[in-house]
Amino acid sequence: MKILLLFSLIIIAIFFLAKKVFYSAKKNLFRDQAAWSGKDIKITYSKTSEVSGSQKNDNYLKIIADESKIYLEDQSKNETK
Image 1 (tube, one colour):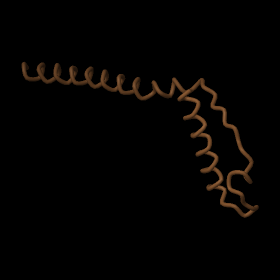
Image 2 (cartoon, rainbow, N blue to C red):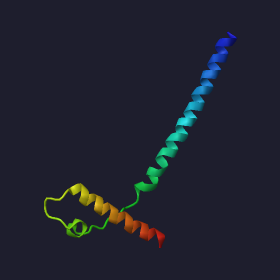
Image 3 (cartoon, rainbow, N blue to C red):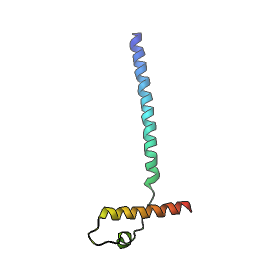
Image 4 (cartoon, rainbow, N blue to C red):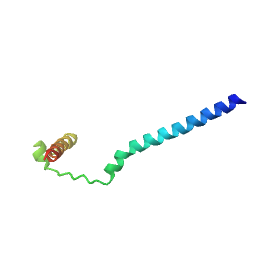
């Protein structure tokens, strides 16, 4: 009888401890998402001819990568000011 009571207390303690750990992890994981949810990211696009100097048969992934690089450079310049 005492062993059964001891096991039940241990199981209940583990349950509440796990519940607290999961709640804390969930809170920490979604904290960053809540911080970004209301922000608007403004992206200024440059003309594709300026970015790649290309024709109609360009690789669109390269164009996107070049645009992203320009955007990130602009953002880093704005943050240092």
